[in-house]
Image (cartoon, rainbow, N blue to C red; front, side, top):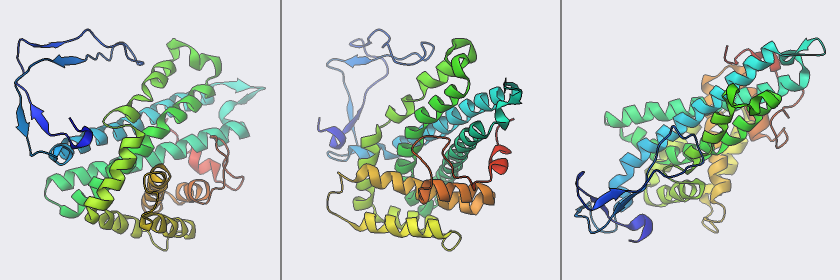
Length: 311
């Protein structure tokens, strides 16, 4: 087999010499059962043509990656809901945590991350529906944007869940809180149907082999042109990066990350409240933040962001 270029084969469901091994011990909850099948001398038929394995299964891959994006966005929001609930009912020095300035920054930053992830996930889901109904432009957009969203949203989930867990203090490390389960599950979607490197390289593959996907992405991001100067500047920089052929693989993670942020910024500028879009462009595109959550600038409209926390 030649890795991604390997042809795909279909095997019958029942075959005496295809036996699953014992359940694999995964780094997740045991209720999420898994196994590793072994196929010895099994009959199978070629699906597609030699050297076209990825093209043959790309629709299935896209749907599974979309599922991962939706799952990571949901997992991030679930963790945020737990953190917000705790902060609303926990007092420190006579003041509820949600009214403490530093905790407000952390929760607002997590809320911003969650909203950006959810908005992108739903945009991809809509594109999948329209592509299924024959929209060629949405199909082209989905081809590139799914790899971008899969990389970034799934990559951010473990970091966001860890921060949300920390909001509960020691209680967050107790199994009874439910947070350890969210934490154990968080890295899975980043691995499923292609790890970070695979999706970054798939972005390059789409750019070179399916240029219409870049045209569709450009149209989507360009729809917000003029709405925010920081977004416009980030989009110009991203276009320059995409046009550079040298060291493409070396820079792939950097480019796919920036593409995800610019795409999320474009969606939020058009579809989210002004305070959300402004905070996102300031922190994620203009770089006015630190590396950890809870480092939004002082001018952020915290009340507006916290007002969108899960009830």
